[in-house]
Length: 304
Image: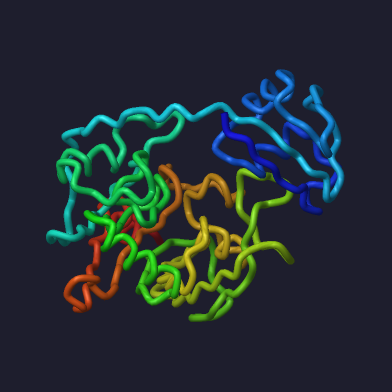
């Protein structure tokens, strides 16, 4: 059993206990916590609570007991990888659209991690645990492009440090609805959980993390814009949230756009094109560009 405790923040005040716990703890569903509460494994301010609908107040202390996690074994899978660069310490892969990076509920097979375990024969960093070997950063399932994978902990730590100090060059290409207000600009906000939908991220006035995206319009079409986005920070869904915040969500984005895509896209039109960093072992600069996927190139050719 794992015992833990957390304090209810102001943005979850007046929220139901079973709704607040997935937000605070993550990784488990509301149904999971409802059962935990009914089984008497949750206390609020030292008092056992067995009703999932119990209403919380700011600064309430929630203590709980979680069962020991059962870690599924990940089977290496012989899935072809588009490798843009590889040496004894790391590799850079061009992730296809629709591929999940690491196993999660509903996505146990066909993941990038499964393919990497087969390709690297287990020689991957272990810092992020058995579910995320070699993974130091990730991109969304429907985002394509460059992703660095670390083969040992030395490389993993060094790349993670470059991510923390924002020295890694990351340029994404996107197609947005409408025309942006300027040919280039910078969006600087705080990004945190959407208070109206805790499964989404949003620009928030307080309590989020600093997020900075620089953008440059490469080409405009009748109803859309082809844009390069340069990440200064790397928050969850940052480009998708920032473009939606500007009023120009990404084409095909089923989470952050209310506009229908006329092109029957599978998720957002976003490609992690460039990845540049200092190689931890050699000190040399590595810079790799992932070619545009066919669907993206086709859109640029047919859009009016």
